[in-house]
Image 1 (cartoon, helix red, strand yellow):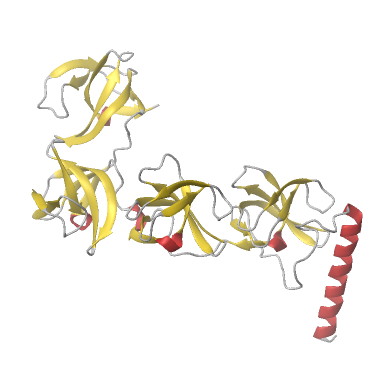
Image 2 (image 1 turned 30 degrees about the vertical axis):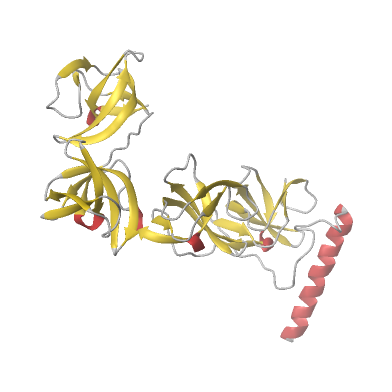
Length: 346
């Protein structure tokens, strides 16, 4: 059979099938799955767990795998969905059961109107910073989502989801410094600070260099205010910030008495903090000393036992091989410093 003749026949069949579907459901002016956008649109062959984006909306999210099922909601171009199962073929389409990231809804969509998530410059776990700001932070990956915050030049964030291509941009969800919740930003205005996350706030780090300058800010242009030696430990307070060929972190050191910025290339990971101010914690050992300050050099003012609870007021501070937190305990009646190695979140 002539290939061109076969193609025309197939196109004619698809048009007839779609026309019949339109007459049956009375949606001649409706978007989504009600008509094909072009003869070249084809299902991308998605698999369960894969993330996809609405390539040409609006797109009907339906209660079942066919044009005869009710519309749950309409998805816009750039909306982000996660494939749960499929495809199921019906009414000329390959239907996928999906989860809608923005609304939490589940339903069926025609795969012909979805596209794969675009590749991007960053990966989940990378630390990025705003290199061209301020940048809008949105509730979802696209300009159609509401602006929930604005972040300025130099602000750092950890990539937790993405990339998603929508509205001419490649979007990433960020857990960023100063944000009360995660949000989506256009990657075109971000630059890589470190891969794999580098060090996180609260991590305990050790100095690898024989003499490491501590600076007043994140860059070689800032004044040297101190120096650290090999083996010294510190707790990460802020960062990373990429400048002058280094990745900078603000650290708390010398029993919590000093802070400054150091180049992360001369640090090594010692341990994670994992506990933040405001967290509820529970004691995991008996006879845990409560001290008046963050080290074994401070006097013991009380002791706690397994199951005692408290709220974190301050910390972490690295000293004497422990990570110290100030907690408020005994129904808020007392406070003091304890070793975080004997605490657990609850």
